[in-house]
Amino acid sequence: MSSSYLQGIQQAFDNQAEIVNDIYVVTSNWFVNRCPIVTRTPRVPVGSTTFSIVSRRFRPRTATLGAAVAASDTQITLVDASPLMNGDVLQLASGERVEIIADPNIVANTISVRRAAEATTAGTGAPNDTILLISNSRTGAEINQNGIALRPVGITQFCQTWQHPVQVGGSLQSSSSYQTSPGVRTPFEQTKMDSLQNLMDDMESSTYYGRGEDPSIASRPKQKGLKTLLSVNNTTSPTNASAYKATDFIRDTMEQCRAGGGDPDVLLLSTNFMLGLATWGQALMRVNAGANVFGTPIDVFEAPFLGGITIIEAPLLQPFTAVALTSSEVRMRMKRNEFWNPRGVRGDSFEGDWMAEGAIEIENPSHHAWVEGITAFSAN
Image (cartoon, rainbow, N blue to C red):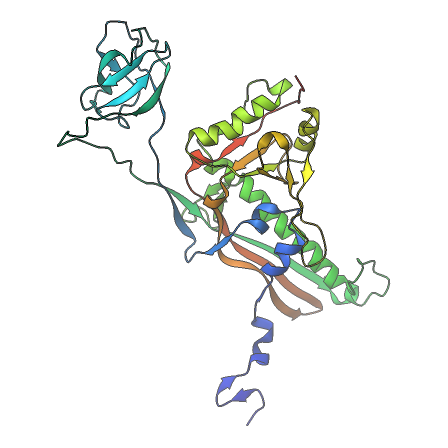
């Protein structure tokens, strides 16, 4: 019997050139500081190229006036009355409190109200004024009351395949004077290492900036990155962009997340944003997050004015960019972790591919924030 077969079943070494080598454990350590979003984010398997990100919404705490309000009006028109209920207490821009006294008309987006509630004075309102939802109020003995249920929202996401071929000719591979990095022995190994960084950079960059493309339209599916998925708290032309202050930063990140019901605990900052923190007089403090398996310290910082929120420098974010995340709602969905796919030898060349397939998943976009478009930082 041939040594290549054992009872008709090929032995493992016969398929050595076809066995993929999952190297996620290595890349998650090696690139922990350069590519923080794809190396530090939890990974969850996904079985399809196309999947849905399901977000469950909470009642918004604000509403918008759809028409002017006079002091004597008992009916108020809103842009959207669907999240409100009978008994809700609202506060107009004038400071007046009003109480909704009947189920809202969600077709006409109108509410019937009792004016000057809670010892306030009836005032006026202008179109597009912001109204605050204070709370719901009931007697406790009411029956047959209508409630609200906000439907979950699904966003379609597409797994992207990243592939970096590695090919080195036999003549180059045989060179004895080829300059390689310490510990790397041959031109093929050096090219493999260079291509692996390119693969990780592509994964990181598309996770931030991918706009998404359906595989049914394009043969090469592309993921929607954070900038596209965070459609709610996405500030691209911030107020005071040319003299951006710490208060502006908190307004565009922390405040927006928390107003949407989020609990932001991680900030990804572009490299030059670290200069912004210094300009604001907020010296970063390094947090001891240990080191990776190669002995490289893991970069984690805190700033006193942010109350213990983890700050991570993200070198592949474009300048003047910050991303606030509620980290429990962010993960990578992977069909295939990073792996080396050897092709062996073809002709006079040594060949193989670095590959990975997956996409970012982020729940409840209102719990996160993205800000860019800043042109200069200001201390005052």
